[in-house]
Each structure stands twice: as structure tokens, then as C-alpha cells.
Length: 223
Image (cartoon, rainbow, N blue to C red; front, side):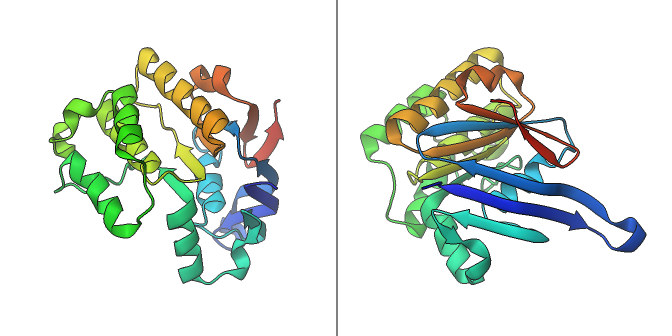
């Protein structure tokens, strides 16, 4: 079964002569155990596609299936529960709570769900991402790259079945990109997770099982 499935998705904004088509008849699938990249330039619709995949935004037309369930048939509360239990988001805005230290960002997740990584697995993630020495820092004390790595660790902490990442390496140098790319590939393959990353970072291509290209709202499989 596909972890994520899009059927004939359209997304438009505005009305009449001001209508803008962000996504045009998109069909897409992502399976557990695979890392899928969606590449494309800024403004191509990547972030819109990712938020529709995660149920944060509804399509104008078409169907979205998550773990075999049609999101269009669920209530808002049911969609929220499914997102909380099944999906880890890494969004461009990072969404760290500004008045909480890094370690408390993870404690906040504990209050929302009892499902999270065991301490040893969490320490392994923080070590790989190089954030173990940042746990007592506040978000405004972090660099852009550090913030991005903390946001990625927080998305992984609930041990979700699906990970959706939006430009998760944009602020990282090449060495860190290799670490993150290898981590995402390992999580997909060894932990049987479905991981979808939208990006314009060509450095991630070597880690992908599948690559799609999104240009002007049209999605094309590359391999």
C-alpha cells in the first residue's frame, strides 16, 4: 500500500481573471522504505504540494490518501489526529517555540503524544545532526543551519511513519547536507519510513530512490 497517494490534484488561488493554478493534475505516490525527492525552482508549487500531502491544505480538486485513508472524507479533528500520529513535518519556517530551550522543544512533543524515540535512538539522532551541545540554547541563539537541524530532529522525535521535509538543507553547508541526506536515506530504508523532501538542492539527488520534477505546477517523474 502507498503511504501517500495523490489522484488528479489541482490547486488554484484567486478567482476569475486573477486565478492562478499552483498545481495542475498532479498524480503522485510515495511508499514506505523509500526517499522521494521533488525538485524544482522557487515558485514552482513545491511547498503547496507538500502541505497538501500532509493535509495542512486542501486541494481545489482531486483526492489525497494517507495510509489508505482519504483525507477529504475526514473531519478537521480526524485529520489533525492523523497528522500528529503519522507525519513529521520539517517546514521552511521551522516553527520552533521561541521561549523554549531546544531540549524543551522535544518535551513539548511529549505532552502531545506518548509515541517518541527511545532515549538512545534520540541521542543517536542528535549526535548525527550535531545538535547535542545545543540543547540548552534558545532558538534566537542558533544559526540558520543549527535551527534547521533542530527542526529536523524535532520532526523525527515522534518516530513518524511519514516525514515531509520542505527545503530541509537550504541553510546547510555541503558536509551537513551529506549527513542529512544519508540520515534520511537510512531512516527510509532501515526504519521503513516514507520520506518526501521538496527541494531545489541538487546535492540530495544521490540519496533518493525516486525523483520528480515540479515546474509551473506540472509534476514529471525523473526516475
